[in-house]
Length: 195
Image 1 (cartoon, rainbow, N blue to C red):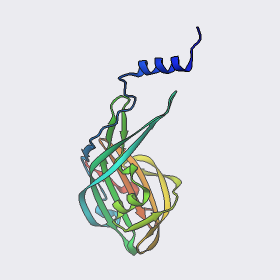
Image 2: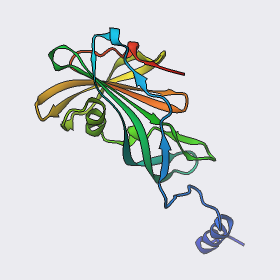
Image 3: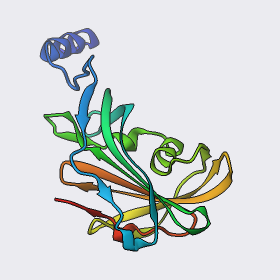
Image 4: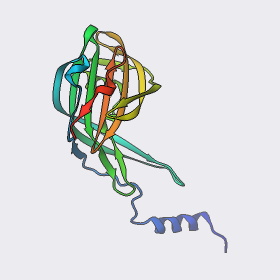
């Protein structure tokens, strides 16, 4: 006896009944960062903002293998934000966000800041009013909190004109840290964090 499409469909439906391949929660995941990343006074920048703020975003998860699956999850994250300024209006910003567990099995952990668009990331980190950010390019690596991280660069259009931006992101314990510099290369290697 040969298998028909109807037979395969019925068998597949029975086999998958009650199984949720990628769960989608109706309620957002709420999480808070534990310890802020900071820039020491000797780095040549002055602190202009230090606050906790809340970001709301939707994290998309794509899993590939024998089957491609995707899911989205709303996240409300309380983050630490530090903004520093140096000569000629150069800015350096740090956003410390919780590393959020989206799924338990398979374990999928995401940085909610990474789900924001590039313009929003630059805006949150630097405090500038950002209209758009061009396509980022990988520009080598930097050391951030003792970890090698890919440095992405792009031009940003702000309310005050165009600026060059560079950013990197690393995992730091239970948190993720995103560092953004405007103007020349920022002091990525000077960033510290209490453990």
